[in-house]
Image 1 (cartoon, one colour):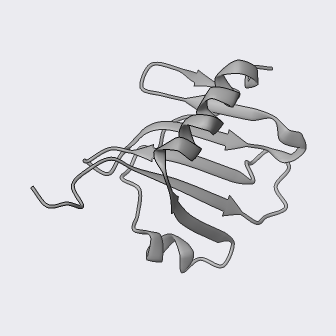
Image 2 (cartoon, one colour; image 1 turned 90 degrees about the vertical axis):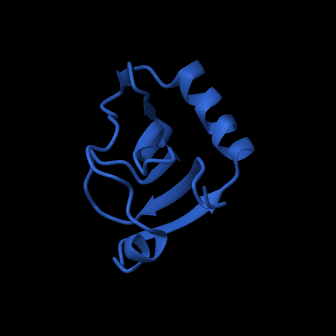
Length: 101
């Protein structure tokens, strides 16, 4: 198994004008490339979250594998980067504590 075959974490800022879409997305990505957990931050600070058993605040896991960062960043409206598990867990904990409407 290569060193790249492990869970990783993503933060993606989405620049757009859609009122009902998130402006920041945090994803925990499994070894298969699919999201395991996700947090979305919407305008005004509302947080939605999802895992394999729950969808809260309009957030759901992606139905296809997460593309490589260079593919995401090739689209001008996105700015994606890897984050560490500590940063993801901080956002995840905040979402679970106050993400429900």
